[in-house]
Image 1 (cartoon, rainbow, N blue to C red):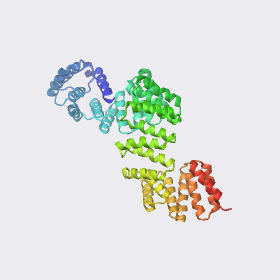
Image 2 (cartoon, helix red, strand yellow):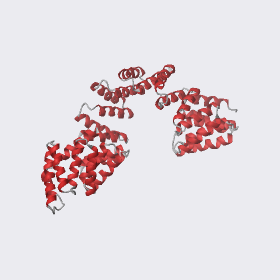
Image 3 (cartoon, helix red, strand yellow):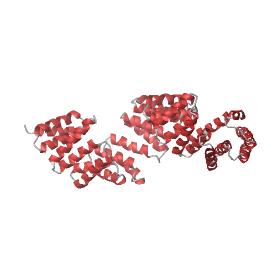
Image 4 (cartoon, helix red, strand yellow):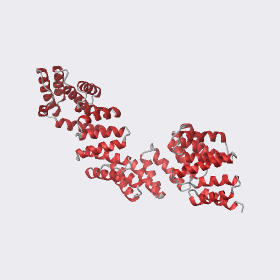
Amino acid sequence: MKKKFLTFCLCAYIAAVSPAAFADQTFELNSPPQKRALKLIQEGVSFLISDKDAEAEQKFLQAKAADPYSAQAYNFLGLLYMKQELYQKAEAMLNQAVAIEPMYPEALRNLGKLYLNGDEFGKAANCLKKALSQDRNQPFTWYLYGMALYFSGHLSEAVEAYETAFALEPALPLEAVYNLAVAYHETGRFFEAVKQYERVVKGSPGHVNSLNNMGLIFSVMGEKERAIEAFKAVLAIDASNVKARINLGNVFLSQKDLAEAEKIYRSAISIDKTDISPRLNLGVVFYEKGDLESANQEWNAILQDNPDNIRVLSVMGSAYLEKHEYDKAIEVFDKMAEIMPENASVSNTLGYLLAEKGIELEKAEKLIEKALRLDKTNRATYYDSLAWLYYRQGKFEKALKIQKRALNTFRISHEKISSDVHYHLGKIHEKMDNFAEAQKAYELAIKSNTDETIVAKAKESLAALPD
């Protein structure tokens, strides 16, 4: 995609240059060598426009020989070499042009395009920013700058650059419209993204990426029927599009239409057996059906080829957690902790599971404390785990202090407090003979209603409290 658009920019720039354009040069031609160099560059540009590259190169080289300080000669040589995909030679010429004229906008823009094409996004952004400091009315430069920012991870700034480009030139090519849509999409501006994707599809009805991405947005927004329509439109154009099949299956899975989801995932697997996503999700279908054995078969088959696949391990671990199969969950999260020792969530989950089982409590404490060091954002959850660990160790005073800290942290962050957290507080109070406080905590656990199993335990504990 990048190379295609860079070629377009190159052609657009060449087409915009004519010998007459050199009549507006602001520099003074004080010597015959400069005049001769300018004439040779004009002739070279004519050849370049006509795709007579050899003749163009000869003229630009002659211009450089006539005037070794002609930044224009080096710039056009760089442009020519970019066209020929001789990128090292192009970089050398363009750098020389910038060395002669450090704020030469055209050379900086061309150098930015070159770096963008070579995935050197930081360098590209720097060059394009300098070019814009000299001339802010260049829509293609703004667009290229947006691309450099996007691929550098600066999404909000990329959107601003794209929007500036379109404000200057609303008729930018469809690839530019698509990239603006993607930037809106990835920054959560879904309505604006859909509007731009629709523009692309209107101009290019077979643009499957736009249709697929619209489907993803509709799915996130809860517009499942529109999502299904978009993914089916992709498959009508390209029946072998595995991504669209997976996304369509995901919509059916989210609607609990397990039969349709299974059918779609199996069709995706038949097209591409190397893609783990449909196989992974087929396991989820079996899990949702209550067939954990078949789910495990699918997941373990993937792990045979790639034992350290975090995606598969995460899904398996979550499934075991939800089913309260803690022994199996511990085995999976222990493996994940080996692979990702600095992942706070994994460390906390493993520590909590060990505490829940009442085993390896020293190891559990270290894991939860590590999670607290690594991730302050989710510390309320980690405090709850630590309090439960102390409860399992019989350190009830310490457990109560930490559990109150967890509750306060949840309240400050305006997060919903789960049934687990209230239930843990109730068990701690009950062990300390604070039966009135335990009753309140169990009632809140039931009211929160975030986990059926915990709610059942809270009801049982509440009924067992002494009068």
